[in-house]
Length: 565
Image (cartoon, rainbow, N blue to C red):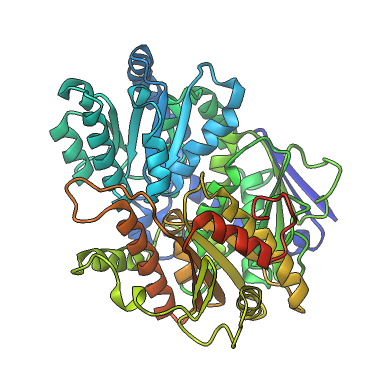
């Protein structure tokens, strides 16, 4: 059985058993008047306890229209930056809006009207930051988004770097564009320094803010046609009130019914959509909005429809991001397929996830568990040595050349080799659970680390009767994206954290720590919280990053010539 809902440039195709499962939920949503209530901004949709926060977080519903004035206001600053030769844009921040900017830029590709560069820095890795600092700072403009500890550190680091290039004060203040809410500390910093300030919407949070100032400003300075994105979003937003022929409502019903049933993990694969980076933005939205109070949907982003883990049965719901619902080839058996332009995808998924959260019974705007890792990081940075001595000085359970394995428990089950240790970690995932890999490394220089996901998924298929899904994320990005699910979702995850030696650290001006120390505090802080919740967690430390990654690849059976081979 197949159901296709097409409207406003978006097609959502639902196949097989998902049709029957979601129809009942869809009928209940319609009878409850959810489409009209949501588009009217009814904050009571998620229950009385959630209403006060929801009332302050529903501004994303209006962004396709209200952001028109923002696009107009940005036109002159963007032109001035280009006239000044500032065509290398670094967006420094964290969370969903940064990933939205990245998806906009990468998807625009050759359609951009200007030859510009957008570099995403939502990291504290000193190697990655140093690589960006080594580029042409005379062409560089920094867009600061949000008040994360990484953004603060990067503001200080780039300010010092600009000074060292000989920039005067007047030129220095023009090198920063700050996106901040009115009344925030970041706004005060920007006003004191004289930076170009763009006010972020106070009724939109970072997770749902793709089409607001937090997502659009960096994209606009990088040459993305913001008006075209808003046109796509507006065409689709007109159908959201409809009880029928509403792709977002159908998708929300499918997601919600999956979480209520046994398929609470979404395996997401791109199959020729052309929307580069959308999967990462969807991942943070689904995980952060639904993963709390022991419930939620775990997004599992895989490399394609032929990747290890896509075909797993059991508790998985497959989601394809494709060009059109009837596209032939692998993956057509997926439970849900979604097609349409990027601008429309943002309101589609925001609406669908908000609906799914209602079905699941959680507040999509609350982040009750995110603050724990931030507080743990802050505590470590306040400690006398800016580290966590009880973690740092504990000897590893296993050392294999460039790789140390810190299990913190008997999770290794007497493993004597790196391969045995990795297999023990995979086997430790209970049925219905998942393995989450988080790499606190350089996304550019250590890009090969991403191959750990398919290699571990393939290894799991070999050593387990019921293979478990494997997710991969970069730290500290994961703290602001899927971190809420890791702590607040179902307590069935096993965590593998990967850290690496720092060869060239970067000091943070005005702070008693370096980027390397900040990164380590974030990694250890998150590890401490995960373990305190009773989740099994293992840390692999690479004494030499390149050699350590190669060793991990060999231990997992990577083929010669691969990035980890």
